[in-house]
Image (cartoon, rainbow, N blue to C red; front, top):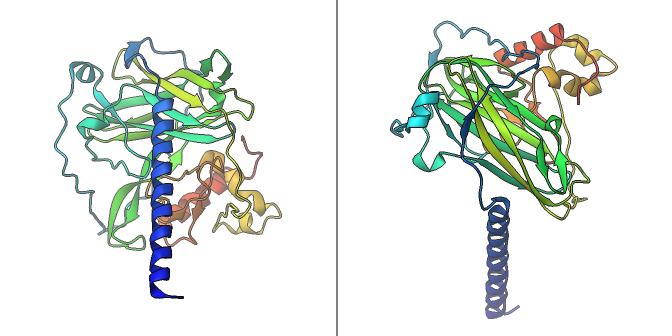
Length: 339
């Protein structure tokens, strides 16, 4: 083929790719704007709800090996100036993209402040919605609960909103296998119903909305309620989810799977070990794509918006994590999964 002909084909393909990418960006922007309602009430104070949830705290962590040195995240953003309502409640609410981590000493940027949570999803989809707190006081028994989402055409029940806390763990740094130095990083998404933490330590919450398969299109609204013992009222964050009028198509060329590695010999040899991940998961793990751009500090995450919760620990050189899995398995033997 003549070189000029090759060059012409190459330019044509480049133009087609560029147009396709532009179309995707325009569609994404259109859907994002469609997800945002014209008017949402701002964050407001309200009475603390009566809460009957069973208390669940983050899993305890092993002690740091003697002589290991912490290398904290190098935060260069200046401390934010709080508004009067933020000073009253004692924390700033902010949000950043799923692929960007929130570290204990993270400081939010001005444009990351939020007054509401918005998202969009197709019927049957698992849609993540996250937000974080930047506290200027200790948080005492912090609780986060999501209400049902309603619109004239239907309802998404509250039990289809899974609330998780991104817990910090001491992980080898700069390499995952490093033993002499470590960093506290957002490592696991745990079902935590009450949590206490010091002033200045950010707390990121990860909500996953499972849209029913038969959900009608429309704008569904609800509230995420946040409260703790350090403030007399609850903080109510408006949540709006636009359900689209079409379903996502499955790609037959792609397959998603979950693999769980357990050092616990009893679980590994049990005839039901193929279900180990699902049985241990309700007490310990449920990670989604996002933190660490698809890799959660050495744990391979599978299937964005396809699997409600999937994590694959590496055959673990992270001894602290391996012991955690062993302890969880020993204290919580195989039992029917909750979901």
